[in-house]
Structure formats: C-alpha cells, structure tokens
Amino acid sequence: MAIQLGRGEKPFHIVSPLLESLPLSKVAGTKVYMKLENVQPAGSFKIRGIGCLCQEAAKKGYHHFVCSSGGNAGLAAAYAAKKLGLPVTIVVPSTTSQTTVHKLEELGAEVEVSGQVWDDANKRALELAKTEGWVSIHPFDHPLVWQGHSSLVQELKDSLDTKPDAILLAVGGGGLLAGVVAGLQEVGWQDIPIVAAETRGAHSFHAALAAGQLISLPDITSVAKCLGAKKVAARALECAQECQVISQVVEDAEAVRAVELFLDDERMLVQPACGATLALLYEGRLQRLQREGRLPTPLGSVVVVVCGGSSIQLAQLQALKRQVGLE
Ligand code: PLV
Image 1: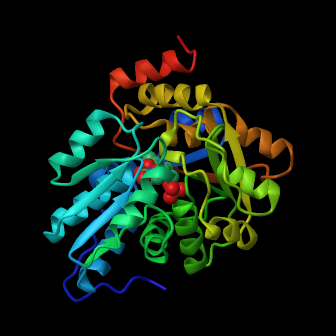
Image 2 (image 1 turned 90 degrees about the vertical axis):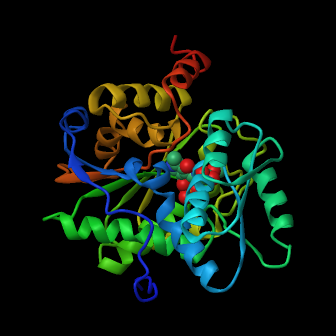
C-alpha cells in the first residue's frame, strides 16, 4: 500500500537518478544500473523511510524526536525534524566520527554519545523516548520506515523499460531490505532476486539466515559501522522467506577497495556500508553466483542501490585503507 501523505504534504526525499554505469557493467559482465541514493537529502536512502516516519509522528502530535543511529539515520531524522520545525535528539555510539557529530549539530540536532556500538546507543534512545511527548524514530525496524523505503522500487518501475534480473543492496538492520521487498511486492516484482551484502564482523543477517532464527553477534568488528546492528529486524528474516534473498558477506578490505574504485570510476565517494554492495560487482560475486546457478545466465540487467552515506571524507578513506591493510 502506498503511503498516504496529507493534502499538500510532500515527502522529504527526491526521485533519485537511475544511471547505467559503464565501468560497473564492464566489471560485472552485465548491464548495471545505479540507483543513486547518495544524492538524497542527508546523503543516503534513509530519508525515504525516516522522513515518512517523522512526518507521521509529527501528525500524531509528538513534539520531540529521538533517534539512535550509526550516523545516516540520524542525519535523516535531523533533516526531517528541521523541516518540521521540531527538536530532535540523536544518540550515536562512540565510533561515530566527530565530523558526523558536527554535521548533526549543524542541522540543529542535540547529540548524545552512548556506548560502543549502535545497539548500546539504541538502549539509551529507547529510555529517552519514554519522556512525555517524545517519540522514538527507529533507524530500521518500523513499518513506516519500510513503506518510505519502498518508494525506491516504485521509481525503478517508473523509469526502467524492462524488469531487472537482480537488485543488489546492503543490509545493516534490514530496513532497506524490508523496504525493497515491500516495494517489489507492491509493483508485482517479487520474483526478482535480491543480493544482500554485509561485511564480515557486521554480518548479523547472514548469521540469522544460517541459524534460521535471529542471532545477536557478540560484537561489531567491521569498519562498516553503519551496517553494525548486532541483530537484524525480525522482518528481515521474514523477507528471506517471501522473496529470493541471496546473502553475501564481503571482507572489510573488499568493501573499502570498492569505495576507492567507485570513486575513480564514477567520481562519487560513499561509505564502506555502500562499498559492501559495490564489492559484489568489483569482486566478481555476481559471476560466481551465476556459475553456482543461483542467478540466471545471462543476466539482462541488474540494479545496484548506491545507498551512500555522509560519514566519509578523503582523509577517512585513507585511514580506512591503512586500517584494513590496503596500504
Ligand atoms: N545505517 C543505520 C544503522 O546503523 C544508521 O543509523 O545510519 N547503508 C548506509 C549508508 C547506512 O547508513 C545503513 C544503515 C545501511 C546501508 C543499512 O541499512 P539498514 O539498517 O536499513 O539495513 C547501525
């Protein structure tokens, strides 16, 4: 079901560009379309779902948002709160960079640092949300977040002449996955396989699929902190029962290398969370899945969701390269 926003109420996200990438098509041996979510307000796809949830919460009369985040959901919530003229508190783990904290403050958010990983920050956010009139804006586990994200698939349907043969995306807590599945079901494309990327050390979805139940990782050891929910949303696991979801785990070094290659190839800088998805192409995972018979041969076209992320600068990319042993 499409989101029913009130009369005159516009969503906060934009219809993002869909471009064919010649370098990615070459490396993957199939036509690759990039859904450029990195150009969304606040720098990632997050504004689709978070924007939707914030608009609904404001309509219900809540007057203060609180959002736990690895960075990008917080930036989206801060952007939406600013648009709505409401105060917002963003709770981030200590791994969040100073630059991101500064960006959040520039958007008018109050920032609280709590714990080592997102799960710790989320506990604190849920406590704060008990305050009268406050509402928790969950970064990935809410039906309105999924509905908001599903608009991405509607846009694909509107602009592609032919149905893609696969959709590639990143999984953190599983909000993007749940949104894409909702969108595919809405437009009747639920038979398209989804290739879901995570980095090792943030592979909570992969672990849950392997176990057949939700698993809590002992710690987040990957550099892709934005994929670092120790446990995915229950809905993510259900999605894998409703659609064909192929889980792929890439190494940190592969994700960071993909970020650098993508910068050279397409002149856009994205976070390792997004690099994880791009690594599926750069590391020949599509071809491997085809050889294994898990994806069709030949593939007509695939869509890669360039989820983006604002917490990255050149200096940080250099530091990440050293950290993962690429220099
Ligand atoms: N990041 C969340 C959760 O972090 C956040 O708070 O910003 N790509 C990027 C650039 C992201 O920022 C995220 C999520 C994802 C992918 C994964 O999306 P999800 O959580 O909906 O699967 C802990």
